[in-house]
Length: 201
Image (cartoon, rainbow, N blue to C red; front, top):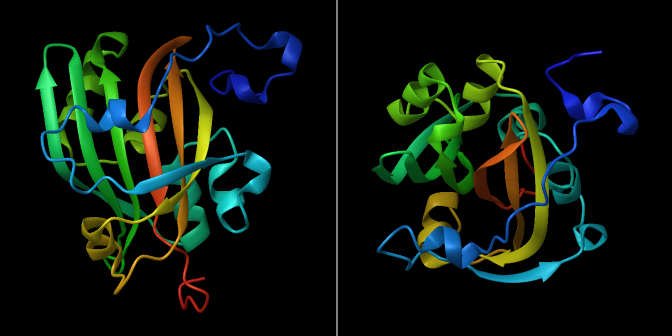
């Protein structure tokens, strides 16, 4: 059993976690002056998320690993905007397939750097590596806790990033990542629509 993955432990052996803090999409967008790229969303239950989005979102794992497995390619991070003041750090990002540059996910992360060791903080702030990969690389004790799922109608900016001529419904989630049992990271993760005929699948 991997001691760095408490989610793999039997329920009676898992460390107790505090309840997830209140979290909304507007709260994460509020860190950035230009919110014109905010999509329209509708909250749905986990059971109402259709495949393949359910398999991509309804789980307690990092989205970096999940999308890399689904598309069979590593992803690179592109930071659209970032805010950093003391231990507060927030960024708006895209994840793109390494081989083609195709954008497969949009996200916002709000991070309390005070919960993270100096090497982890420095690599996150360098903005060169997806967040999930940084936490895995440094063996940070972590638990991913999704708190809400939603149906998404992409905004015009999001359509541009995803290469869509018009909005196509997709899905996303809000979540909290606990590091060393503390709610250090709040995220929104929105998938690019999965194309029916995808040569990379």
